[in-house]
Length: 415
Image 1 (cartoon, helix red, strand yellow):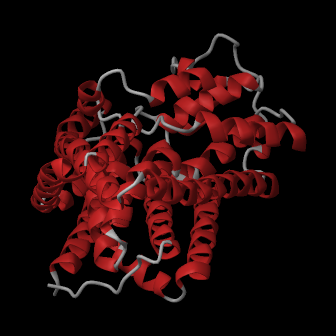
Image 2 (cartoon, one colour; image 1 turned 180 degrees about the vertical axis):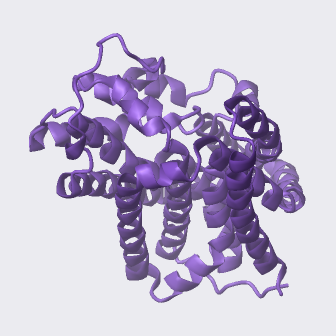
């Protein structure tokens, strides 16, 4: 069995064992204090794994993006590829948001709840100051490259890396040692990623066991309708993304999905798109995508192309409005969609980023922010699907841009 296939099997086994362990512990030790202690302690494993992944992200994004931009050669190439990338991102974002809006209107998952309007003072305490357009544009540009890397602000790292890469290319031969250094750093970080990934099954087991012990398997039944409808929406979004990919790269889209099984499972099991970033980059290069384009498009995608999260934002916002019997006409819903297109960008590094964005949007349309309490209990299960979908969306974008640039080669042979 190939090493990549073994990792997939180990992750799936860990996922099943985690569910079993969570159920057993909850049955044997039903006390709340005991369950909380178990969840807190076992979650340490997942936390350590995610911290190790985040340790890799900043130097990997910086080194690969600088090399990618420098090797593209000139600002015209960067602008051309950047334009094609943003065209895909904006189109995919709109489709994801619009699909969420259509599905929640057709399925109406919140209508049957008939909840009374809550106390106007009830709040989740989520910070909504980040939601203005002004703050977004200010946030894009780092006042310190070191701080941006220390805080894993991917969008700011991308902006600095773009400037650094263009400047490196502009000085010609004097920049070649820098490119070689960055290329070596990127290879070292990818090797380090291989070491970290060996711990992935343990992290998956711990993450699933902790959440099942805390919430119990029953929560999946209680919210089964909502979760099922949301995953139906994600399934449709996957088909749309694959169809769009098929129009550009043809039947190879199926091979791409197969090669992405590892990072998809990683993102799904840990509910973190970041956890899958290094592995996604590695698999795309094996698939034949140009490493310069992978290094350029994929980091941008983590700020501008979170398709699963986009669909969730309209789905969840309108679900809450339905739950309180608040009717929004088509014009208001389209306004909400456009607001989400802007406010959702660049907050990928914020904890519970989707909830932060939704909270700000609800306030703009006089929908009770406290409605998010309806989703908090199952947000982890929803986040698993969102994260896996984000991997698909970004991988598809990278592959398509490579094809548009005539840089999509044949898959590399397995070692």
